[in-house]
Structures are given as C-alpha cells and as structure tokens.
Image (cartoon, rainbow, N blue to C red; front, side, top):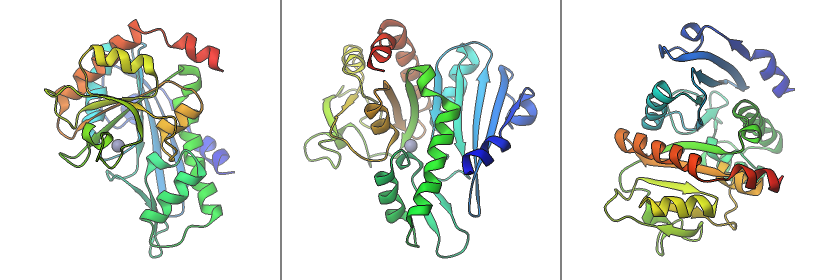
Length: 272
Ligand SMILES: [Zn+2]
C-alpha cells in the first residue's frame, strides 16, 4: 500500500530547474518520489545527466562531500545521481513528538538489521508493523536506483576525522571481521577508502595503491553492502572524510576507470 502511494506520488519530470531544486545545466531529467512515514516525508531524487555514465547513490543526507563530488563528476562526464533527502542529518526520525523513532538509512536492507537500528536510535519501542513500513523505503529506493538493471551499486559516504577509517577493519578495530582483506596505502589519509564486495575490484584498487576493504561474506547487518553481497550485485562504496572533496572526486575517477577495465558485468549476469 505504501509503495503504491509512493508510486502515485512519483513524478517523472522533464524540467530539472523546477524538480531538482538546483541548477545543474547538464541535468536533462529528474525523477522525484516521496516516501511517507508518520510525521515524516522522505524525498528520493534521481538526477539524470546529459551523457550516460555511472549511477551513484547517496543514502546519508548530511554527507554532502560525496554529493558534491558526484555532481562535479556527472557535470563533466554524465551519469545519474540518486539521493535520499530528509533534512541534512544522518539518521531518519519519524513519529512526531515522543515516543519518537529513528533509524540509519543504511540499515534498512533487511529486517534484522533494521530492527537493530530502530532499537539503537529510537526513544519508543518499534513494533513489527513499523519495521515492515520502513522496509518499504528500501524497496522504493531500489526501485528508483535499479541495481538489477545497472548490474552494480556505487554508493558515496563521508566520515568524520579519526572515528572511522581503514584501521577500523584491522585487528583491534571495531569492524575487525567485517573485512576479508584490507589494503592500506600509508600515504593516503586513513579515513579515505573504497569498500567493495568483489575480489576483482579489490585486486584492481590494490594495484592502483588505493586504501581498499573487501567485505567478508560473514558480514550480516542491514546495510546496502550486505544486501548487495547476498544478491550478488557488485558493490563499491567510495568513502572519504568530510571536506576531502578533491580526494572523493579522484576516487570516483579511479572507480570509473576500474569499471572500464574490469569485466564484472558478465560475472554478475552469470550469477543471476
Ligand atoms: Zn554515510
């Protein structure tokens, strides 16, 4: 029902200056949909640039370094950019006054992960119906981003200096065990890295001397990377520290080159 509502609210629109809210002259079309939770309206905006190229996805609405880098890339090289819009914060909260509920939009891609996220961030106790309702956001987002027809997922994330980085995946780090392999270039900032699910991507990026993490198959949270791995969709997350705009753009170009050089679509097609 909620998905139906969302589809009804979806607008395919060919006047980007009205629809997208920003003035990218190379945006030729924008698709905007809304997903409604109690006392919360979440926007899903897909900007389609003039030339065909990679499709990017930004989940966290306060991570504007990634968004800006993707826009800069798409203006020159084409592509599409899909983003969630819910008020420039990290977590999505809903339910109005207390009890108030909240979750991390990168923990909505399976029931268990979402339950855990709601439990961590909500004031009130979330029930099954609520989990089902929020899971609809994941389905709506995937309907718009379309990883199945792309044959891949490329997300962009930003982090804060020192809290998270390549060292988080190494022995002693709080994410140790999430990664099968880690490659560190000591000359790069430890907060700037590319996180992938395919060994072929890991090997390519290692050769390019880029901080790289290969996700372990035993990682089982509600994140998009786990969803991608379980559904065998090749996944790339380009993650840099807030404000490292140039580095984010550089790593996007590295990934663009990787997609030209590494033959992974055949691998994905065979796995389906
Ligand atoms: Zn993020």
